[in-house]
Amino acid sequence: MLKAAIIGAGAISPAHIQGYLQFTDRCQIVALCDLYPEKAEEKKQQFGLDHAKVVKDYKELLEDGIDIVSVCMPPYFHAPVTIDFLNAGSHVLVEKPMAASLEECDAMIAAAERNGKILSVVAQNRFTNPLMKLKSVLDSGLAGNILHAQVDSFWWRGHCYYDLWWRGTWEKEGGGCTLNHAVHHIDALLWMMGRPTQVQAFMSNVAHDNAEVEDLSIAMLKFPNGALGQITSSVVHHGEEQQMIFQGRRARVSAPWKLTASSSLQNGFPKKDEELKQQITQLYNELPDLTYQGHAAQIDNVLSAIETGAPVLIDGVSGRSTLELITSIYKSASTGELVQLPLAKNDPFYTAEGLKKHVTHFYEKSSHLENFATQQITIGTSLETK
Image (cartoon, rainbow, N blue to C red):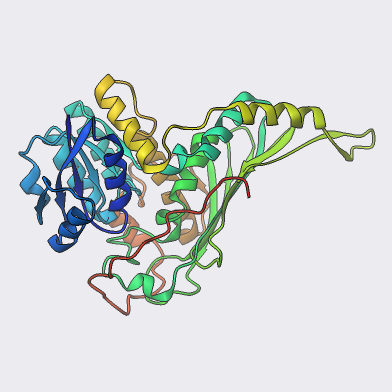
């Protein structure tokens, strides 16, 4: 029986707790930690974790022989907490974004390798039927080479969202909507397309004058094969719609699922390719559904890796790649430069201090709220067929 701990009892922690509780024959939550212990105590009571220890300082758990830790704290805590647990012999599942800088990502990866432990970064959107099936369709090659990719990460957050003491600052949150909302779609884009070679971006803060960070960004990408991509990240879009669209040479596929296939008339105008559409539809429909989805599925993936030695789907290197693209968006938007990837270790944006120094600061925080009342949060609209 693997011993698990939840570090951080905020809004995302129930997704982790409920995930572990899917596998009570394989693991047990033995500890909850939060800077505000009453929040951890509340989760303990809510989920019936009668045998779980509640602590304020995570360091009290380093000697407890915990097998797997979920790090659910604000981004600037991710690296030190993760490294301490890896050094203590625990496997770590860390929430997005992986860390506040590429330098910290590299330190986390090195700690995992040095201690022979698993480091996985939360990207629960990969563990959904729509994205898993879309990935399989793209990998099949039936749609042809991908020519253009479009990511719309549309969310809406009220002005008071950034009143929370750590949100809306480059130091503690590490960024705005590009980092903390579009991160899952950026991860999925890299999973499906690989790393781009060039990034040109713009960002702005159009509705939240109590935050240093952006609430809207648009990035244009160029991939090694010449394909282009675009990413819109927002917390000012009413309706909170998210979608990923891939235009292949032979067909267009997307999540939410939509399929269009075209062939050419003699004059170059399109006609529907019903045969290819039927072929792709058959492939999509025959793909099996996942046994688990979301956080539970990723926790299952990490537990299986611990038990069998198999690799995890999303490791530290993958998490770092996502942060590298986001960092390049911030660099381009702040400097006006066309950014080349990969970013070098001597790049001014490689460290947290360098990023804070060079990135655009839109506003100073005007409010500092210590804590919000416990409320249900949205972690993404469904990418199922609409």
